[in-house]
Length: 395
Image 1 (cartoon, rainbow, N blue to C red):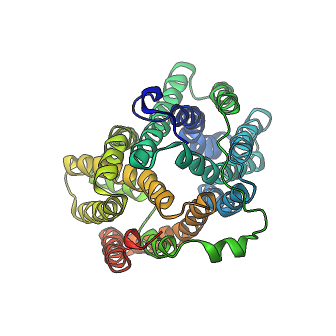
Image 2: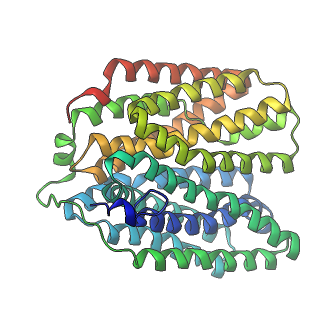
Image 3: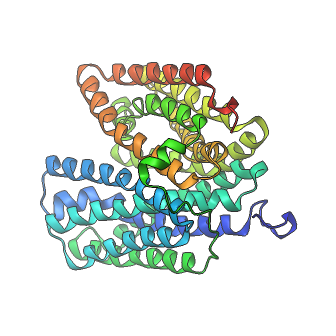
């Protein structure tokens, strides 16, 4: 249970901050690498852009493949820490591959294994967060955690930029960067190992199919609306392409990515507080509406200042979608939060792949049509949520 409020820091349970620090260190490490991975893979390792696309597709699939398994295992045993540690440790060990191999095969294996670690750690950690966060401030707690998490995504690319500016862009410089990136990854595992376990209620006799059958009807309704909305969730790369087509240089596009992350960092705690006050169902609908407006904006934007505003709006949407959706699931599903969060991540992650393929096909026909299609699906998801109202069903 959460500690008394006088023992909390920044209005949240201390473990929220500790888990946020773990995520910050991990994202700092990962984003240092991912900021340069495409360039390293194609120029230093000599792989083709087509092969890079294949590897990234496999990585995206890996990032959602183990979510339900890890969430179910966490609920079945009642343990959170051991599975979160395994996921973070797996991602850290994967980074050791970069220190011993610069081959195309080695880099591809690293990318997939690192994402498998992300897939495995997410649901147990989020179920852990929902346990230590008081219900009345759960949205704020998830928002604070997301702000710390995305702070690493802001500083990681900047750290990589600084290192390569100082050392140059040769193969040796990349090796130094990979060594430096390993340090915060190791620290994240050490910090997590020092956090006290907050176990859940074990359900030892349930298999994965039985767990699905006893998940709440409210959660299953929300999963329907999430699935519809996921088809609108195109790759972030299309936003960068749109910015470039409007007139932003490659360097400016990198700064837009940083701007998106900064917007998410600053808005996530505020959005969380708003969700605690208005209700998490209202925030889910606000997220769909924000994405709808953002997609319409990208469809018709023709000026650089419009692109800047839209990237800020996307940061706001991301703060709602990434943090408040998990807090909402924790409200809907009390007994099997790990499995529910894991299943949600697994289903939506699988749908993201065809969503990006559809967006890519529409982009080839007419770039604006990809964004209009996404806006239409966001409107459909909003309508489905209003019809099903998972937030109003008895728990």
